[in-house]
Amino acid sequence: MALLSFYNLAEAHVLAATRYRHNVPFPAVRGAIDNLKPKLPAGTLHPLLSHDFFTDGKNLFIKTLEETVDVSREQLSLKTIMDMFLERVIRDKDDNPFKVFPIVPGMAQKVVSMTFRVSSSRPVIDGTGVQVAIVLGRFKAGEEIESIADDFDIPVEKIRAAIDYAEWTPKAA
Image (cartoon, rainbow, N blue to C red; front, top):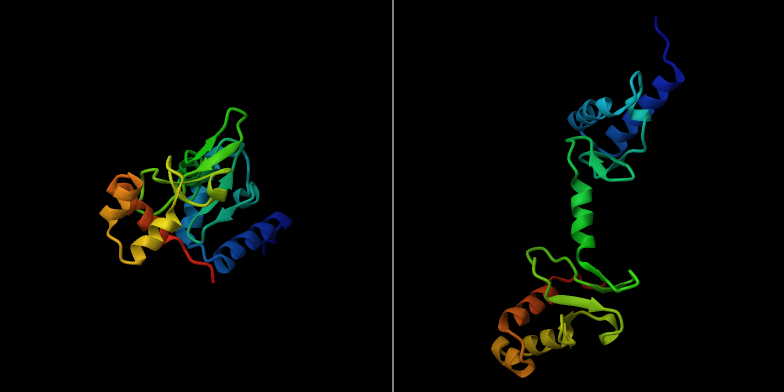
């Protein structure tokens, strides 16, 4: 009868936590181990002890200085997401963030922004200072989008995008 080493027990604990506490499926764990092994120093016997792992409940991730790698499928998934968020943060000449274009599902264009010291950083139609809440209020009061666009001299497409943003925004409970 073979005995388990401390490292075997520790790795079994990581596997159990990954599988049963975080519900990561076995194929994702197997894929993570298979994709991680070639990246480890030769002779590494316990890949599940080699890094701190993170999960989204479906896959396993490790963090490195350069990137976040989805080792379950060997893809750069979180890096892509982070890059998407970071490109929507505009910085000033001193590298301080001063404008954010929120990410909204289905809205790729940068119409709505929140800018430091503009409308108390409330969402506005970018470049206008017109608060999204004002546009939404007028729309909900029954005013036509074209009329709102004419009043503010803003293209109809931007008014629609602002309304879509405001209607998408989760409301506080």
